[in-house]
Every structure is written in C-alpha cells, then in structure tokens.
Length: 582
Image 1 (cartoon, rainbow, N blue to C red):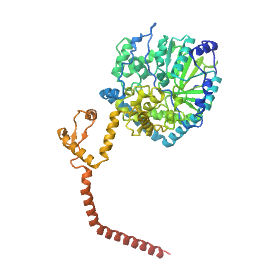
Image 2: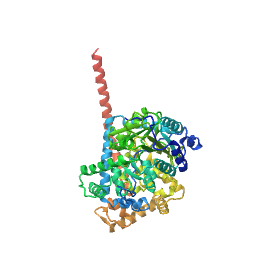
Image 3: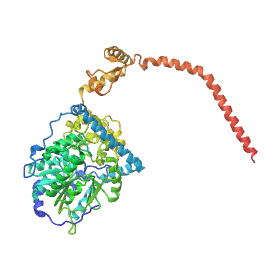
Image 4: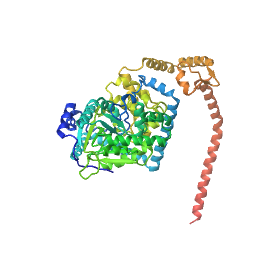
C-alpha cells in the first residue's frame, strides 16, 4: 500500500494557484464548516457514500496525435421519461440478455463470497454503524481530514455546487498549463460532466478504465457502476476500437485489451494531470483510498506531476481500523472478490526520497445537494451508499432495462433515489421512483442496509402530496376502491369481465397484445378469470367443510381418547421400570 506524506515541488507557485482558485470562486472547506447548514447536522444518524465508481463521459479536442472531437460522438437524444426509455430497452433483446447475464454472475459471486466469509449480516451491521456514526459527526471528521491532509502537503478545497467543483478543476488545470488529463473511475466527475468542461478549455480527458474507455469512444455514459460497458459485446467493442486505431482489429479479447493497453500507456506518459475519485477518505491521517482491478488508478496517481482527487463530502470514515470493515464489504458486494487486485492508500504528494508520485496534489470535496439529506428522517441513510452496485445486480427492474433507462448519472435502485435527492428540479425526476417493484431485493443485497424500497415509497408519496400525481392513475385507483369495496359492484364487474374475455381468451390465458394488455403480454401472459370465483364458491365450500367436521368429530374424539390412554400407559410403564431399578 503506497503512502505519500510530504510535498516536493509544484508546477506553479502556491500564490498563482490561489489566485486562480479565487477567480474560480472556490472556497476552503473550513469556510463551509463554519456555516450553520452542516453544523446543525451533528448528532443525526446518517451514512455516507459517493466515490470511485464509473465516470465515463464524452471528450475530444484538436491537436497533434489527438483525435478530433467528432471522433467521440455525443450521446444521441433520449426520450424524456423513464417509461419511454424503458420501452426502448425492453425492445433491445441483446441489451436485456447481456444485462441479465452479467448481473446474474455478479450477484451469484457476491452471494458466494459473503456466505463463505461467514457472519455476513454482522459485518453489514458494522458497516452501517460506521457510516451512521461518521455522518452524525461529519463536521468533526471533515475538519480532521482536511487538517491532516493539509499537513501532508495536500491542497484541500470545498465545492458547494457542481459549478464550483468544475471551476476549481479548470482553474487548477490552467494554473499548471495542462493539455491532457488521465482519469481513473469517478462517479463524481461523471456527476459533474467534467470531461466536457475540460474539453471546453482544450484539455483532453482520457478515461483509463477499460470499460469506461470503450464507453467514451462510443459517446455514451456508463450503464453500470462496476461494468460501464455491460450493454456491449466484443464485436461492438472491436468496431469502436478499430475506428480508434484506424485499422481493423480482431474481436479477440486479448488483442483488443492489448491495443487499449498500448494506447493508454502513451497517454499516461503524456498526461499533465492525473484525476481520480475516492472510495474512502481516512480522517485520522488525511489519506484517500482507491480500490481497483486494472492498475490504471496507480498509473494515474504516480506518473503525472499533478493529481486532482474529487470526492463526495460523505466519503469520510474515521480510521484505518474502520477501513477493515469497508474493505471486507465493498469488494465482496461489488464483484464477489475477497479483495480487489489493487488497494492504494495515498497520504500526499511525493516526498523527496520517492521515485514517483505527483509533485502537487489537490482534493476537491463536493456537496452538490448531499447536505440536503442531513437530518431528513426518510432519506438520511441514502448517504450510506458505498457504490458497490449490489442493488443494481439484485433489482429485477434494472436487470430488464439496464442503466440508461434511468436517465441520470446513477442508475438502479440507488439511482432512483439519489438522482431526485441531488437535483433541485425534483419534478423532472418524478417518474424515476416508479422504476421499482418494491420487492426489497435491493435492501437484502446492500452491504450497509439502506432501506431503498422504503425511500422509493416515500418519493412516490411526496409526489402525490405535492399534487404531481398522475390524474388517470388517481381516477383508476378511486374507481377500483369503489368497486372492490362493494360486493354487488364487484360481482357485476367480474361477470362482465368473464363475458368479455371469451372474445380474446385461448386455452385458459389471454395472450392478446392490444390496449392495456399490450405491454404486459409482451413478456408474460394474463390468466383468464375463473368461471366461478372463489367468493361465489365459498358458501358451498363452507357448508361442505362444516358437514365434514360434524362427521369427523366422533372419530376425532375416540382417537384423542386412545392417544391419551396410550400416553398414561407409557408413563406408568416408565415409572414401574424406574422403581425396579433401585
């Protein structure tokens, strides 16, 4: 585990950087902590979690040995609603099969790894308690982390909004004269659309995670936290990489991976800035921890002279001892591994005796709506999330429609709750809470026990209370309530239904795809209404049952008397045997 604790030299003077950051509107984290908004949260029980996940975005600029912006196309326009986007996904047979296959593999791996570890629920509860405690004292741990990180030679900045975080990042890039940035996975940079912002000042941003590099070439966003290119096969990937290489590449995975490795090695050596997310930030030492499997994050944090780490304000955990619990939960929940291939702890820029590492290191701590959840009794545990993706793999809705149908940076059950929480225009994301069956599989899969299904219900309730409910749905539910609450109306409705179904029923099922049954029957069949419903059969059944009980009672009485006599005799024999033994 690499730990760097001292700062060596800078590409630009501290005063130059400070002036740039001031122009960008950046504020130090202590300025934020002096305010009432976060200090008031002390004592509330909340968890934490945003950090290293997926962060692919589209980029491109002109320049020597650099592909034109048009080579990385912008994502095509998507429908406005979850329902419409889900409809597109459901009609994509390859997408559905690919997502289902991969999520099934990840879910099974997680189950096997957690069961083999033993006492998994105890570990889950420990993880939950660590997150709850940390956020209950978030002001203290953020101050402690910032102080220790600065003592290690790190420049610590706080960004209240996405715009501030982007401005800070661009100011740092301009201050060091950067022309290229290599990036490891980061959900925060995806949340900020940072690649586009870097492109606007002619700075090339290169995703170095294999899956995210593929998605970047495709001009798409990640569709899964752990496997961003989950919706693509090797033939589609070969086509993308062939266009990037300017020659036809075989769809053999070894050849494709070899090409990307060679291409990225060049980018690592050319880069002026390395940019990372953060899985966990250790308050007691001011360190940040990265989990990865490909080794690209280590290249990002050792080769470029300047490092920028972006992290959500809730990524803090108190100590390295607490990391033991998190390091047990995260890899097993994400990929079914006991531990990721690489786990790096970084405590500052390179020391004078170090052979590698950045000469200058910045950490930007982002709020961007997170503090709005502090003290909210329904959503405060949302911040517990450690971005493992386990809830996506368990969710039956995600496994059918994939990640792009959710429309935001975060997908799956966590995205359905987190996206409205982080957005000020909540009404725009009203329908995302409906992308759930409320089965609770996400809660059972979550390593820190976030009750996402309860939060989704709360979002739906708040939508209705705010007067943004679907009028047709309201009318339909009121109509159903009226009919279901009246025996005569219910009987009449069932009778009409039995008559009407004769036109479309075949062999006991209704398989037609017209009207309201079109969507439902595309993937399943509707059973017909019984000719005699249970409510009508009950009177006959009750009479038959009563008659049977009357006939049975004498026989039951005799049998009970026989059993009682047998028990008394057995007890007497046991007593006689015991007496004879003295």
